[in-house]
Image (cartoon, rainbow, N blue to C red):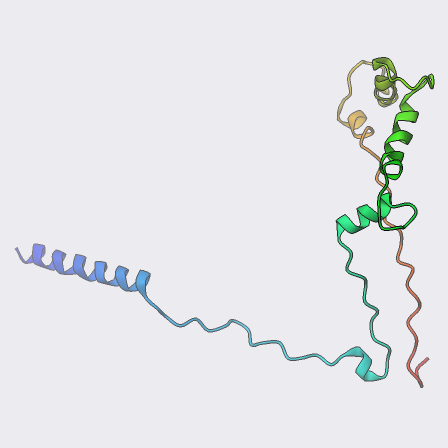
Length: 151
């Protein structure tokens, strides 16, 4: 009988320990102390770092369309890129795009990628059809000036 009593007491102790673990309100201390304020570069006699303008992606997209920089995008400006793309696809220049003209670029790209002329692209051939991304232009930053006395 004492085994049952000892088992009951052990079960109650385990329940109490679990309740304390999950409902404990221990104060959490920060893992790292706050970072000290760093001295500014301009304070050391050197010029400060130039700041970049905060332009959003949407502002950059608007500026690409606004060719005359008047702060408005006219219909001609908005449709210019689409007209250029249409003109590239309109092979005979009649102002109408047939299915064959529309598909000609895709068929040419497939034929160029299909190196073994099997009519199917394997993984390496398919990888050649990925659109070519223009690399970002390199930074054209002025050379850092040296403080007096350093060379």
